[in-house]
Length: 174
Image (cartoon, rainbow, N blue to C red; front, side):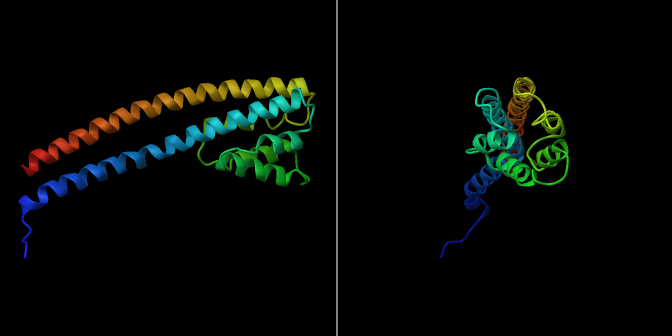
């Protein structure tokens, strides 16, 4: 029978702490990754909608249906809700804003950019809608660059903190 001592648990304990630190870092980074994925999805979708409206001369509902074919989960759910609600006796801008608020991966400033499209979509000539969609995409690109920089900075900070925590623990255990 093997007796467990502190000495025999030192390596497995250090390994367990390293794994916990890594998983903790991933857990903290997860919302940032979801936001980036959602921003990318909105940008791709808006680009397709813009193309469909400007060049395909499609109406908004048809353009959105075609553009959301491979949208990521949050974007797909938000646009699905919007498309399902188009028949309601409410202004398109209100329905669009309500749908955009469904994307919980986005920050308030991201949603504000998307919500600003509501009063334009489906109400203006295709070229005018296209200009607004293009402007929204440019703003989302800027927000995405900011989000990537923030994730990169936080990622480095987390790695340093995890490394320092591991070093401190090694000193305490030794």
